[in-house]
Image (tube, rainbow, N blue to C red; front, side):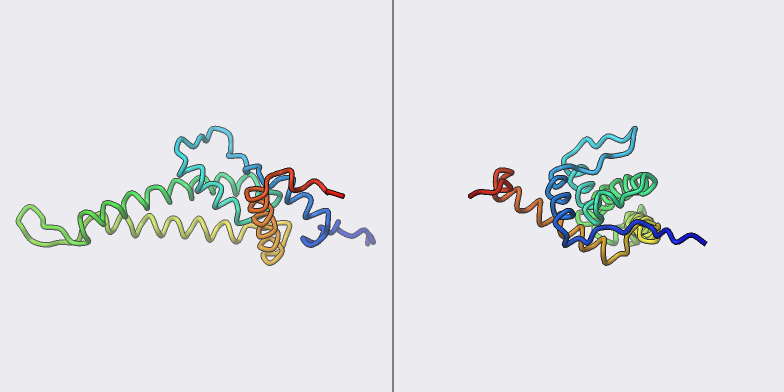
Length: 158
């Protein structure tokens, strides 16, 4: 039996982790090859979903699933907008009030989205969920500080 231990990750409170968070705060997690987001909404959803974990914890196959999550969210919003206009019940050809077909499409899309979310949460990661949340919060704080004060605020002054 070997006495070698698995390398431990730095605590998210360590100066090294904080420096890494600031260094990568303005970098987006790259989308998988062949995927291009055309709208600002798609790009913002990508940033939102990838912000759930530290950048280093996203595995390539997770990112493929994440592209599906972004697509599903867009479709859910479109169907929901149609439901808001049409209502949950509509008259059919004979004038009978029936359930809007978009309601089933909406429920199906939500189920698919939740399945993708569940699959992403059970994928193994190099960190425990509590560590990942802490690191994601630290990166979010770094992004907010950079947005508020600019990159020059990171330079030590005398």
